[in-house]
Each structure stands twice: as structure tokens, then as C-alpha cells.
Length: 254
Image 1 (cartoon, rainbow, N blue to C red):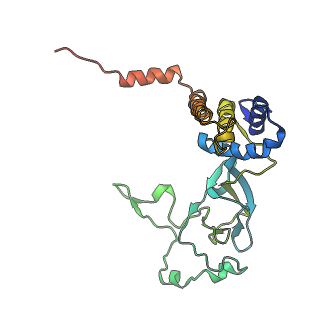
Image 2: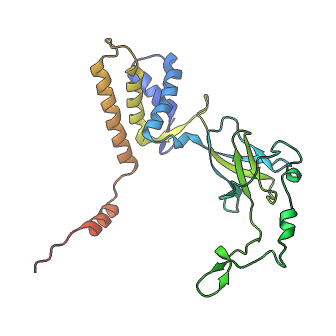
Image 3: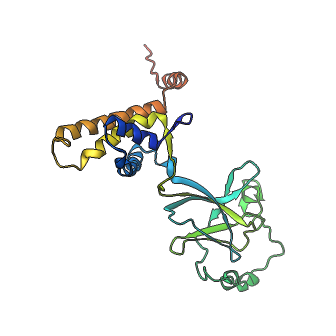
């Protein structure tokens, strides 16, 4: 079912099934082929990027969602529903990651006691006229905290100063059977053409999977891919005018 400027991947699959006069028993095979086609089209981000609001454990760790392929952003929310990202800290140790006493086992204050200062704020940036604070925030001042991803433990490790009871995670997730995924309507014909090609590409060279038919379907898919991106990012007159003004060469007679 189409929703505005988007159409479901299921609709594209059923369009191909009806066009090729095949049965619905082919749906599962074509559903998996559909995601391969989305990767080939470069639009797999329409289904892979997911957002999660995850609770923080008492030892300042967060369990990653099962099946996560790659993380893209870790942070907290602000008043505008925006994710304010935390700073990645490669120095955070993975020691005692599963221990309830992680915070006490992975912290040693003896080094700090050697270098005591009268104030936690110091000026460390010369702007050409005077020493000031970098980015307008004093060193040692309050901040959100830092994190590190431990994929082997399937955990987000947070610094001890992190004070929120949740984190927002944006990550790449694999497609899940039974869920509905949408793509821009401009790519519908390209997906149908891709299904037509991949449906017979690996078949033996027979009447149904002739070599010439395979070549023609492949050519049609790449042509539809080109047209889809042209429709998805159309050339606007203002853009063309700006380009012509910037790139026009004038010849001057002397």
C-alpha cells in the first residue's frame, strides 16, 4: 500500500508477481531478493537505520539490540526531539564490563591525587589575544559523558560521569520478516525490473532463462535505476541557472 511519496516493498513484489503471472508461493524468495536490489540501488538506508531508547544498567553499561550490524549514533535527547551525540572515547576500558562493580573496579583516583589543581577549570586555548576556554566551555566543566562500543560483549560502555538513565542508539539493523518496509515511489519500477532480472539470473540457460533474456533484463534494471535517481533528485531550474552563471565562460576580445 502506498503512503504519500512512498510505496511498500511488498507492493513492488506483488506487482512483479502479477506481471510475470506467477503464484504467491514465490513471495519469500522475491522478498529476500528485494533487499539485495535495494542495496544495489543504494537505498538500503530506508530500512536499515533504526532508533532505540535503551535503559542504562547500574554499572553504566547498555545492552545492544540483538542482531545489530553497525552503530551510527549514540546520545541523549534534547527538547527538540534531537539526538545530542556523546563523544566516543577509545580510552575507556572494557575491563569488568559484566561486573556489577565495574565502576569501582575500573577507576583509580591515585593519578588524579598527584596532580591536584585549585580549580577544575583552566584556560587552555590561545586565541591570538589571550588564553580562553576551547569552544566556550571550560576544561573540566560539566558535559554529557563519553562512551565506547564493545561488540564482542554486545555492550555500550559509558563513562562514570554519565548521569542519564537511558541512551538513544541509531544503528544498522538487518531486515526482519513480517515487517513492512517502504521505499520512494520513484524506485518502484527499478525494484520490479531488478526482481525480473534476479529471478532468472541464476537459472540454467533454458527457454525460461535464456542468455539474451537475462542480458535484456539486466540492461532494463540499470536503466530503471538511472531513471529512478533522476526522478528522485530532479534538476530544478534554479539549480541549473546557478550552475550556468557559475560555469559560463566569457571571451574578451583585445
